[in-house]
Image 1 (cartoon, rainbow, N blue to C red):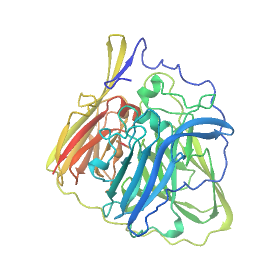
Image 2: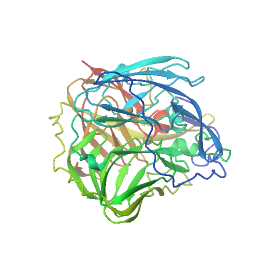
Image 3: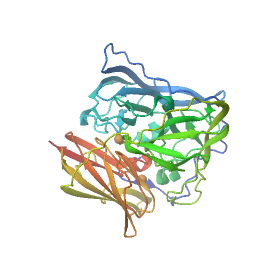
Image 4: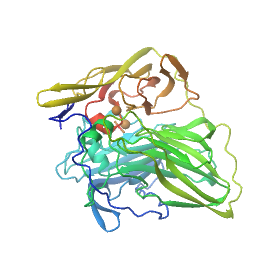
Amino acid sequence: HSKHGMDMPGMSPGDGKTAVPAASPVLPEGAPLRDLPRLANRASGPGRFEADLTAKPAIARFAGGVETPILAYDDETPGPLIEVTEGDKVTIRFANHIPGEETTIHWHGMPVPAEQDGNPMDPVASGADRLYAFELPEGSAGSCWYHPHPHGRTAEQVYRGLAGALIVKPRQDPIPAAYGDTPLFFTDLRLASDGSIPPNTMADLMNGRVGDHVLVNGQKKPVLTLPAGSRRRFRLFNASNGRFLRLTFGTAPITLIGSDGGLLEAPVPGLRVIDLAPAERAEVVVAFDQPGQVVLRTEDVDHGWMGPGRPDTAADLMTIDVTADRAETAPALPAKLRRIADLGPPVATRRLEFTETMSMGEGGMKMGFLINGASFDMNRVDVVAKAGQTELWEIANLADMDHPFHLHGTQFQPVETERDGRVSKAPYRAWKDTINVARGETVRLLVRQEQPGLRMYHCHILEHEQLGMMGVVEVRA
Ligand code: C2O
Ligand code: CU
Ligand code: CU
């Protein structure tokens, strides 16, 4: 691959279909939804989480007896659920047993010190190990995740299986325990007819990879059985490289209670749809009042597909089988969930422009995914910010495709979105670390980094990140 844009000798965008498999194997469906396996905490006292985690090749059997070579954390895909509590001291001894490839673990959404962030400047060599150690600040509870972030290999390592949920629990959880707390970790899978995971095609590189299957906790269309009258809390994670999700629970109304960075200040009831761009998360409560079947589904999303052959991305993801037994009447959601800090007026404004370029060069077409006209260079600082200072970040998408913007090191607060000169204010305060910036839109965010160091920001379509749509902010003390 090339670090600075994608060379496509003799190809025009959209006709790179060479590696698309003829027929993907059929995956079994309808098994009971499994709980994610958990990473065991071997700390003896409270307030600590200590574990080992290994990335290595493994064999998965998605399609019955067909063997699929994957990459896995501790032999699992998705990786084991890491469940910690705000304020915990976390130490994870990570071993890279991937032959011939460096990797990192990035703690997506967690405000860890810059040198613990697993960014591309800090690779773990093949065969090496390193200790990740950080303390989770108070108020950092949320639905985070972890994935590799090595230079030039992130997209491939993630679609081969490396991604897991990292849930930071609040010390006091205002959501009734009777609702449960069920993570639904969505990943994207493409299988060739021999069961292998094929590499990215030209269309994947341009549009973001969209495979043949959306898996929920590693399963195709699992079934969750609940008694009528149940209320359920779900944490929804879009851990796919490039697939946009538009989730519905049949006609059941959805109450939004949390975003990437934890609970909202108050529940937002009466929603029908939850949009999750790649890397976004949400916490919801869904009421299952009547017996019958409710299908969790993703509707088709067009995020500005380039070239022919846009896939229909609608799919049934999971069935909720609501039985006639009545659940005990669950307590109501509290009207107030928590307070979210006011970041105050910004003292500086940054503008980041996202563009796509296509040019004919020596040997063929060259495509670039750029921020402020530049392709990622890890030896360049693009923005200098000051720790503890609130800034207004203006992300302008001047391209033909939606680009989900992600910033490391902190959670930000969406302020407003501008489209065709019309501004719509964010309807409620929320902590986010990833936000979709639709084509033609400008999104404004309040950003405050608390810790010094180098931090990445990028499009979280991992194919775009890898092709250069990433920059570095240096946060100074
Ligand atoms: Cu989820 Cu820079 O990453
Ligand atoms: Cu991140
Ligand atoms: Cu993008």
